[in-house]
Every structure is written in C-alpha cells, then in structure tokens.
Image 1 (tube, rainbow, N blue to C red):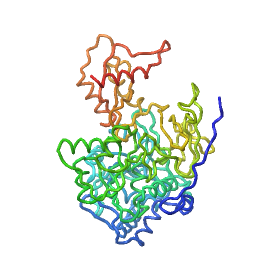
Image 2 (cartoon, rainbow, N blue to C red):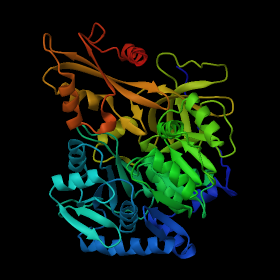
Image 3 (cartoon, helix red, strand yellow):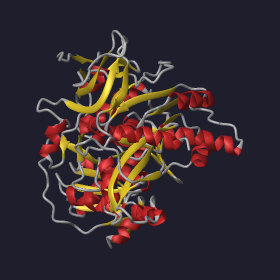
Image 4 (tube, rainbow, N blue to C red):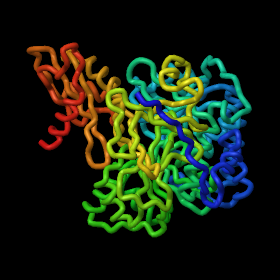
Length: 533
C-alpha cells in the first residue's frame, strides 16, 4: 500500500489580513474579544433575541453580571455546567460568562429525549444544569421532569436551575489551546455518550478564519438558527458573529415563514443553514406563491449535511447568490474546508482545506485507487488548532480517533482534485446527517430492538433532496403481528424527533452474510427503491 503524504494548507489573505496573522492574535478565551468589542463597538447591535435587542456594551454588562451571579451559585473554575436549551440570549451569556470563569459548558439540545439528556448528564456530571425555559418549551419539560427550581432572571428570562451537585472540577490551564470551553455530545441513546472537548483556541480559530472568509464584520446581521448545541451553530455562527463584531439573531428553531419575514424586515445580510432548511424555504415560497424578498442578503452557505446539486441550483436561482458549501465534523470545531467567498463552483466541492491545517488521505484498504488521473482518494485525516482535546473521560474512544501527535481520523472518504478542491465521497462510518443533526444508526437500532416483538433492526440513511432520512428495516419474532402505530409510539417515547425513522420496513429476515453480518449496502439500495413507491 502506498504511504500517504501529508500537506499543509497554505497561508492566505482573509478580508485583507493573512490567516497566520489572525491566528497569532487569537485570545485565550472565547469571551476576551467579545468584551473588547463591548468597549470598541459599544453602541453597535450585538444580539437580537425576539423583542430583546442588546448593543455590544449591554452584552458586555450581561456577561460581567452573569460572572458574579454564577460565582454566587457555587460555580468554580474548572467546573462543568450543562445547558438544556435552544438558541437564545441566555445561552450566549452563560457560554461567555463561563468562559471568563474558566468553566466548561456542555451544550445540550432540549429537543433530545429524556433518556438522552439523562445519559449525557450522567457522563458530564455537571456542577449545575441550566434550562432555558422561556426559549424552549422542551427545556421547560425537562426542568419539570427533574423538579428543578424555576427562576425569573431580570434580563435573561425564565430559567430552570438545578441544585448544586457534587462535582469534581477539572484542572485549569491559562493556554486557550489546552483549556476546554465547550462540550458537544455526539451520541447518547445507548451506552455512554461521547462528550467532544473543544478548546477556546479551536473554536476561536473557526470564528476568526471561517468567519473572516465570510466577510463577517461590524454592520453584518446574521440569522442564527443553526443550534448552538451543534458545533456549526456554536463556532461558525454564534462565535463567528460576535468575535467579528456582527449582530447575531438568536433563533430557537427553524420556521420558513419566520425566516423569510426576517430576511425582509430585519434586512439580514448573512444566512447559514443546512440544505434542508433552504429546500423548505423554497417549498414555502412556492406553496404561498410569494416572492423572495431579501434586500440586503449578501452571503448564504450550507453545511451540516451533504449538499446535492439539485438543491444548490434551485437555491442559487431563487436567491441570486452563490450557495457556499463546506465540510467539517464536531471533533474539528467543526470546519475543515469551505468554499471561498469569490468561488463560483458548479459542482459539489466542499472547498479547499482551511489555511494552515495539515491534512492527508490514507489509502483505502480495499482499493485506494483514484477515480480520475491526478486525483487522490482516501480516508481523510487532519491536524490543527481546531481539533478536539478528546472525548471526556473516554480515553479508549479518544485513542481510536485521535493520535498522540494530534492527527484526527475523520472517518470520511475524500478526494482532492488538481486545484486542491476537496470532495467528500462517502462515509466510512455509517453516520446519518439529518437536517444538520448527527444520527448514529446503532443508537436507533438499539431502541427499536428493545421492543418485545422485534428481533433485529438495521438502520440506514436515505438521500432525499437536500437532506437524509432515517429508514429502519425491522425483523420481527416469527408469527407475531406487529401493530405499526404502537411500534412508532414506542420509538417516539425513546428517541428525539429527528432520530425517528421516516419509514419502517418489516422483513421476514434481514439480508446477511454467512457469518451473520447484515448487508447494509443492500438495505441502502432497498431504501432508495422504497422511496420511489
């Protein structure tokens, strides 16, 4: 097998500055630049959260006030707090106040099921849990389920706050490359969920470099609907906006009518989303026979799941703008590559690797051959400041993904063309990405297998326009009649809505090899055929 060659993406000019200069001036904490902006850009708009509007000076005051408030509640340097929330001003302030206090924030989407939230809490062992009840009915339900105290914060809104738990703080490092800022959980229906430890420097590298490539700056108005519990929403949208002095609109969840109204009324300039979001916006316009009115929109991008050419063409035609694309994963804070602002690609490239990151393609064990002369194909490995520290208290899982010298195995199969454009060919892990959320088939399979009538389950992803669906193939106990409505209700109680199968296909027996290994490739083909029925 040929040895892989590693490369370093070259330095480049970003908004008039070299990437190397931007990296050299990264502060050691997420909050540092935002608090500097509170003085330098004091009257500029920073946050719009529903009817609440804060300038940078007001955001700075809220961060300082929250530092004192958290300290009085027994939160110490090195502690972990957990937020069960959707996007809102309270989540932004908790994140940045925690940064000032050297406290980690485990950001958990309140739309996860009770079982998922509890498993994450059991791994994270936070000092306290904060529920953003005003911004999220589901957060309120989790707060009620845990019987926590309700608190009406004078400026952050209605919260649920857990009692003070006995929790061992982690060591604190002055270095932003060592100190963890946030944990994003990548799994958690069964077994032990994995908390991805993201450093201040890793998140800030993305905020500065990726944000700069989008020309984020003061005066820009950014529609922040991508969840901060997903690293794309945290690093690229939230911190990318506030680090660069833009105004962030915190939006708890996607609604096509609300998005389209805000584009017009608030004169949004930057919109980042997942492909499915754009597809639903276009469907809404067609259904309502409305024109698209986005008078000041200058930049749109898609990420979080594969962008198909049909969606790209339709979105670009409707918006009159290039739909930019990128690629990353939670363990890389998240961005590894993205198209540059002046790029006009007609294909599915995810752009060039971000400047100064190292990368290599490991030859595939079965073939490792290029599709075209001059193209390299292999499993993508990356190294750089954005790579996670590891999985929280899971050294074996960390070693399986991250080498001691900092190389991350993405698990994705990629190719590079002669212009160093990166293309994602497939996933060596069977991850399903639905509306920007990661779904791990074993998690879904384990839940369905708990049903007494079910013998075996195989879950695969099915490509649809701009998104992926979950399809479950289920083998039942012989002779048992399965009530499909009851099975769906059983699954709904145990899985977050985005993890639930779009289709359940009952089979007498799942296709398998002689050794019993399920042939998922065959099932993926079947799933696509079922889609046409």
